[in-house]
Image 1 (cartoon, rainbow, N blue to C red):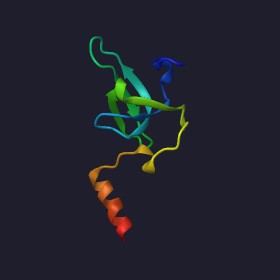
Image 2 (image 1 turned 60 degrees about the vertical axis):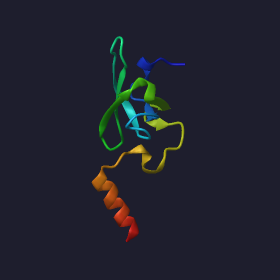
Image 3 (image 1 turned 135 degrees about the horizontal axis):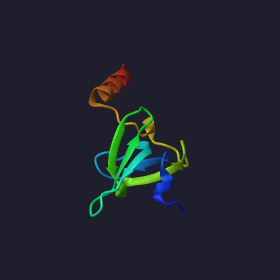
Image 4 (image 1 turned 90 degrees about the vertical axis):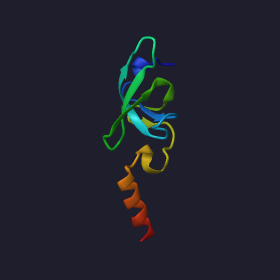
Length: 91
């Protein structure tokens, strides 16, 4: 087993919170004694987001995931992008 300090730049999936289902690579880790530790991630589209340590599940080493990724590779689309994709699919 590896500790979290070795997990920098590993692929992980968010399993809880507002970012559930997103996939990204670990950028940094913030330690807050007496409170929650925060993990900062970056997805394949270059968007950065943060979540609690308890919501992070490592699914790969480096840039290569050990499991197959969900549709869209875990990238969360904005409302406008999602609507445009659904309209394009209907046509």
